[in-house]
Length: 259
Length: 259
Image (cartoon, rainbow over all chains, first blue to last red; front, side, top):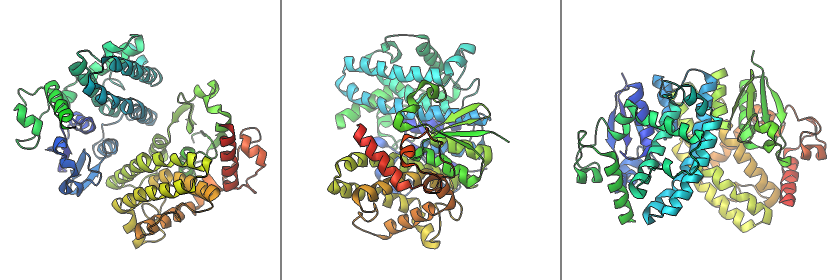
């Protein structure tokens, strides 16, 4: 059995991609926190592991691999169960994950400046720009058809796969920040609540309600020990009283105060 | 045997990635030109195949897949021989291809405005910025070590693989445009010709000298028929008198005249 260690940061959606996959496929792993708030990822000890100074990183049998999407491919190759079997479906998942990365995520970072200034009008405009990306995605990836046929479907059907691991953690981050800072759901701010938006919302809720997503993100199975995450220490959370929204809010406020 | 059609554009490096791989692994394919100069990729007939309105696209047994890196993964799954066997090495190739895409390619598009204005000083500055990316890449991917051990090595060794297909077509485009418009090699414009730059240059030359690269890019095995590529028609090239540099120059000048 391989010895696998994941280096990450609790609130980082790129790390959550990998942790979500590990939870779903049931691989045992050690989890080590690299405190991004303290810029631990840029310290030499970590740069020796990952020259990019980014999380996530996996160390397995003394070998090192990193970058979130390559790591999901690595897990597929090593353990299977990350992708559907069919090659066309696999490729579709990679196409639509690429689309999401290049469009939704890049636009999403704009929100953090809006959050800082609590620009409510700007947040509505951004939500409606993001809605166009979600509509294109939901229509052309045929996700909408699949949700219509089976309202409890994930991206592919009844089983969580690559696209779910790769896409939903970022949507969750954005949705969480909308709720905290604008007291309103990202989805509520979208003006035309057509079927495509409704179906994407259903899809999103299916994934975040899954046991694996909770174990990876909103109710993590293990928390870093005292001293490894500055914000977590302050809030004194344990796996029992952990609150993802509060942690996110405290972290963002500290980041803004720091900037 | 599967019937495979590749939709592309002769000068597009994203298409060349896929064609290069097809030539190397020896899969038979039909090639159909979508004239980007004439914006054929945005016409409804093509959008029905590829909703992004981009090349490349593969149609195989009536199923449709697209996006250059997902297509390389598709070919690996379907035919093999795209990646090395070892999972860690596979992952390394994906990591360094991602790095190249996110850093080198994004910076590279800056050159096209420099070319238009023939900004020689700007081109030197850009070459030296790109050199920093090449140094980081060559050092940390351990490419430099491999070239030192075997000066005729590709990214992985004696066999062309994913990273070569994905990375080199873009370097060739940039190098070609430097030669045409600044009468100087991209590599010559780099100030400090250290070992990392020398080793990258050796690697680059190994790949562009390969038979598969030539068949895919500089001496394509099939050319689009009359009427399918506006610039090619004008130059009246055949597979016998085809000249990649001239075609590139004519295309770029026409693009600038059009803009």
